[in-house]
Image 1 (spheres, rainbow, N blue to C red):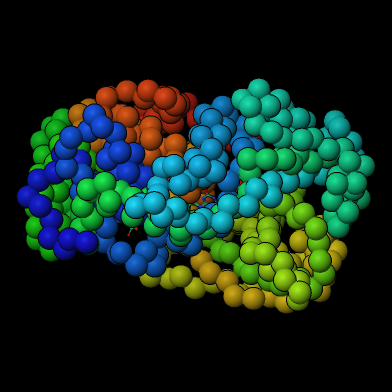
Image 2: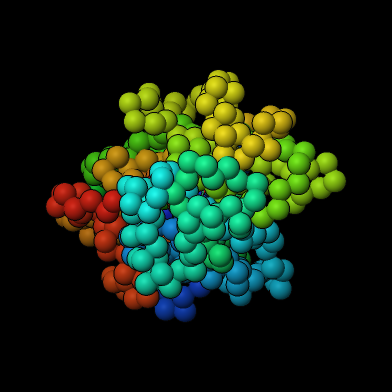
Length: 410
Ligand SMILES: Cc1cc2nc3c(=O)[nH]c(=O)nc-3n(C[C@H](O)[C@H](O)[C@H](O)COP(=O)(O)OP(=O)(O)OC[C@H]3O[C@@H](n4cnc5c(N)ncnc54)[C@H](O)[C@@H]3O)c2cc1C
């Protein structure tokens, strides 16, 4: 790790967590790229980075083709991680567990609104090649005997291609491989961006160092809006505080996927079951009309009431075995929320020749890191997307008021 920035780099990436390191890796591994890549990361402990505080789960159950394609590439990448990210023959261990997501719709029957959405989504997901099964109420009861189905109309479950993994390990694997391929990581903070009209010529770092750059990539996570503003660009991305609670259930429940209740509450197993039971994680985002203030970068305290008063009762209604659980530790982390449509903002900015955005992942950036890294590396190198076209998620959609809206958000 270098602590001094070189005087210039062909590509400077602000932020060296999952997204920044994936872009760095994908660029560096392309034989057509001959330049120097510098990643500027202000905190190499990643203590406050979303990539380190994530629930680290991957789903195919989106309702837009671009997000499904991004996740299909993502699961393939995670399954073959060694082919991409092994260093000196050492394959990173990310403990991928394809337990599936289970989206549930409430109601009496197939004509209820939630059921119609799940069916519509299922049609798109299947068309794109995702392996998703639809269940009616009786089907749910048969497949998931621990589930209370009395108020459910139906559910959709990812048979393969969905699950969870060690997000920290994925981030570190990208970073390690990028460094092995010659990427320089500098411990410093980008505090200014030098721009003359259409061109960004360099960055200023907190240490006082200046670095000239060919291309500047904003992968600053929840700090992305501030970094974009340094270049004179306003992106509608704000940090939102989200919590993850752990709890332990003594009863053995076979095959619990990442369950998303119609209330918005979610949970999934964490780690392997043992003789004493199974650990779970879970949470719930603020609902319509509930307070959802921006997160203060210095306040990672956990809401002490959310679990007891809201999450636990909702989960225990859905999985009665959760009546008797033992709450464990909890943590808070920042969602880089794109207020425009809750989806990533990727690629170039109109009017600036050499700025690339990788921001606003709104709670699904870790699973998107493989495909986004590949796509943005292509953009930097070739000025176009060659494998997966992510231009639907371009910044220009905001000016054009063209929202990419997901019908299943968590
Ligand atoms: C509680 C929680 C649960 C989540 N669950 C999931 C999930 O299940 N699945 C999923 O796919 N995603 C999930 N996410 C979202 C996912 O974690 C993020 O979208 C993803 O990690 C974003 O990665 P990133 O590299 O863009 O940002 P971060 O991981 O936040 O990294 C940004 C980095 O930029 C650095 N930085 C910022 N400003 C500067 C600067 N000026 N100079 C230098 N460095 C700078 C920071 O120090 C940081 O290391 C979750 C997030 C949270 C908080």
